[in-house]
Image 1 (cartoon, helix red, strand yellow):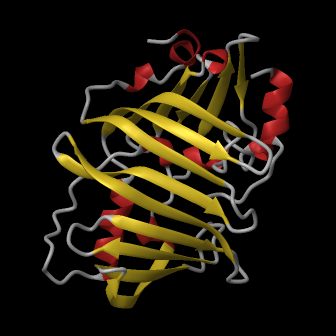
Image 2 (tube, rainbow, N blue to C red; image 1 turned 90 degrees about the horizontal axis):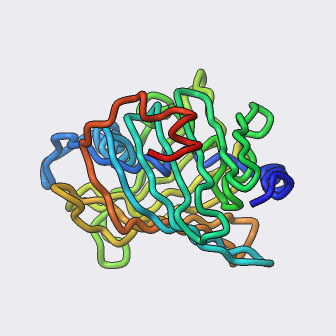
Length: 264
């Protein structure tokens, strides 16, 4: 990817998803299926499906738009919610391209021009690697239970699966972009099935679905995520994990510009 191509892609302004996609880790919330739990406890558990202590994974991201398609295979490392590193492995023409998140800052590395670019605030809502996810997705630090009021709107069967459905409305003081979020959660194991994001006028903006639930190590995780923008029928970005390791010993010094540029 050239420097000019990167900037053209970054100028695509999208709504933020508010999900730490590339740091997908799981921590135990201590909840037991069959017991009664509050909406807050359940959503906290769901939120932590995509957060955690540390992880390393290999994922393939496929982007489909009206005009082109592309697939990238990436290696991903994370430490908590503050640090993550993504490096493209293939295709060969983009191998070595990387993104580093350290605290609230993001840098992109373009190996073809050997240039490291710090993403300014004005570009945080630009497309990440030409996908339907944004730079801001990588640094989103809010937690659902802290920023939203949560109520149960449905409890029963959808498509032969017993689920809870919740509506999350932002608290008055919360600095969030969504007018509301609807979540669907599978009751038997607290796995997220779907999240729908609405703007302040209650218009649906995008839908994220979770699937291919598998055990990676000692835990169950959704290894496939598919996000569809409402205003672009037929377009989507999917992420599928082939490998996931958890609770690795990774020091925060690993998440450096040197690692971003030169590898491990």
